[in-house]
Length: 329
Image 1 (cartoon, rainbow, N blue to C red):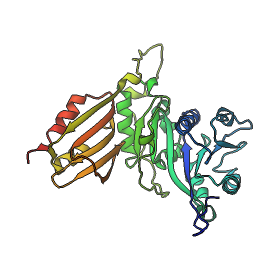
Image 2: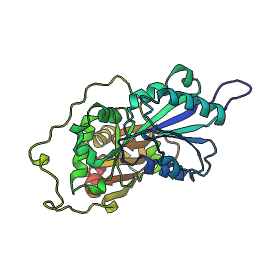
Image 3: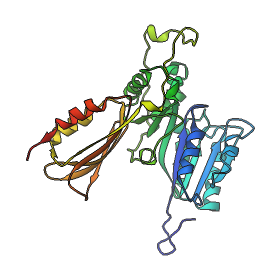
Image 4: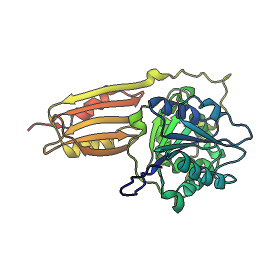
């Protein structure tokens, strides 16, 4: 147990909940996250599989962390008691600093979060982030999935629009816009095989509410309702080369109002910006992920130095708009 012997204050374990429908890529994401760490001695992985036989636990056995499996049910319903007991046992046995929960594809994160936030567990656990992996093809058929599908998206702090390499050209941009319109307060990042960098994944997030409003599902027009058939449609290949990274650097001052308008006007395809921004009276550090901005003090060299990551965008168009915000002093 992580306890300060002098103050008797518990250093709470941070719980990261991985959500998403069956086959979306949760285990792939979890393995990727665990590969970033060199020391997993204080990390526990709790895997929930809806079935008698646990597969994901076996896939993670060489990760270096302790893996606990819950099978034969879903942690949001029949296994809620088991989840509560398992988290209590994990804390008492391991005293971890971090717990990853890979939920079943049919788990409702609202109910799962309610278990984690129970007062007795909240004494030593804190739910720090919910990440939902969204199979891009599932978004196309979202009207068929109902409330559970919506809850997995609405409860997320971060949505990974995964498997975008299965989409036709142009659909990634379309889906990003639709998801942002449906869940406007969530960060959304397009991925292939859940490839994401640690800084993007762990970016600060705003608290989520469990008081959800009914979703207003997008109604596709007749053209988009046509049957998808590999025999009748030509698929244009999409691969990692569609990701674009570029930079901007200047010692000139940025007009504050203009810069904020620049950020607000960015297309959803620009999903990552990081670096200092020099204004007339200060320099602030910008951390922009999936449409959300975080500003922090900057003590380094007074300049604007930004790195951009996007999907299938024109860097010159973005940089032209940004350059228009520079002012003479």
